[in-house]
Image 1 (cartoon, rainbow, N blue to C red):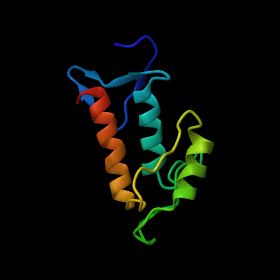
Image 2: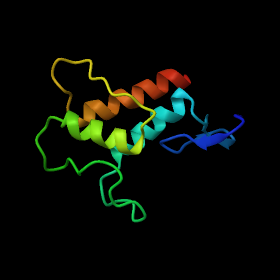
Image 3: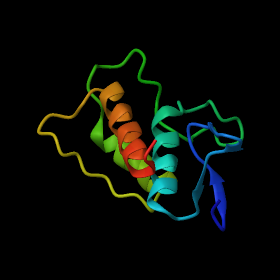
Image 4: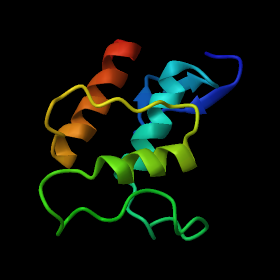
Length: 107
């Protein structure tokens, strides 16, 4: 267990406890980035501007500037860097974050 635990995202159990990340660790920052990417604006009643515009009916490519602005606003500890010449689709971007978190946490 960590000294200052935060629930890991997505929420899951690591028998018999809930998975946690230490506050201000790379894993916790990656979890927060993941939360911003998968939460459509308007979903959180207490913070209606949190997240990204719902990409369901948008073009298949992500808007890098929209992502950078959202992360700068909601998770200033993270830095954005797109390593591909062509921006990934939204689903590929979320998969990259999930893979990064799994590699970092060893799950």
